[in-house]
Image (cartoon, rainbow, N blue to C red; front, side, top):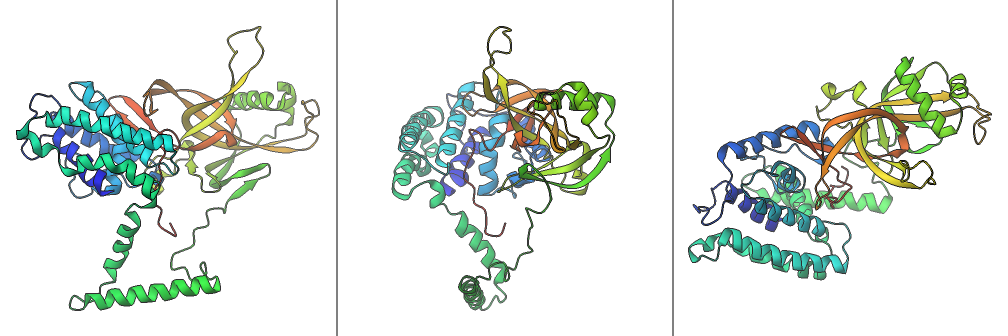
Length: 436
């Protein structure tokens, strides 16, 4: 934790801005102009509006905010924000590629599970990274020896540490840091601080003992209960619940046509049969929550951000089965799962009368939950970190709500958006305090 976020990454940021121990660039060109760094800082701070709150605190302004940086915020900035904002900023791409390789290695270390082969990748990867670091920043010049502190050498021992103590999360300092944070407010006396600390630790231990002994964890919890699974359940949809607000609407013609088209494909029925089975009113909902620890996602057309935290949680990753041979008329249908990104604009609960002519026949009334998503038109993808970039949204498509997998964040940079998908190549273990 301290090795990377409070030392290596922090030192890199100082090297890029020319504030590291009065070192200049030497024979390289890795420093960023002041105006460029300020632009990166402004974009970092602005990205909080398009990154859902479940991802963590808002990223600080990297250029001028000297008080909001913690190991947690610098970790998030390094893994998710910096790869987007630093792209194309250096005079030579080799410095950006070097930083991306560090991000890749850190992501490997932060996996919840790690294989022996991946540990060896970490080992060889850090050896090459340190060698390249010395070439770019130390430049094998004794007068620049301060560019290679002990923390750079310590990177070479991370793989051995994982072999000895298991994945990084099994021995990181976040639990102790959080515990110390809980202890500090309990000090009531400046003259006798340790008496206050001892009393708090003793009382907490007694309370935990009672909770465990008599199975009273929920009853004696000092935190307000959070009912994550309380919402409206729809029959046939066991993986998610719908959350208020909601309202009934009569779909306009364009939306109605899309609903009919989606249901025709789903039910293998004719448009006439689907239209006859549709009830005139559709129920729209503001939020959907994926159960078993999943995300809470908002529909953008019932935007509640002005009443909440002002952070956009409407962009999602969703998966569809796509015909590989769709471009070839005479080839057989071969379905494959494909990942898409887009903005969830509407959540609609649609009630249907029986459709006997469907295949197979629908002999009973049914309910379908559709998600209206405007797809992100992905223009490029980072080959190492799997970050997708887009500039505009495409057409509206209606899919079943169960195809929605998770909420994603976005970082805007010079007219493009980089999509932050925590479930993809940058997935990592995070510390969640008990009761959060």
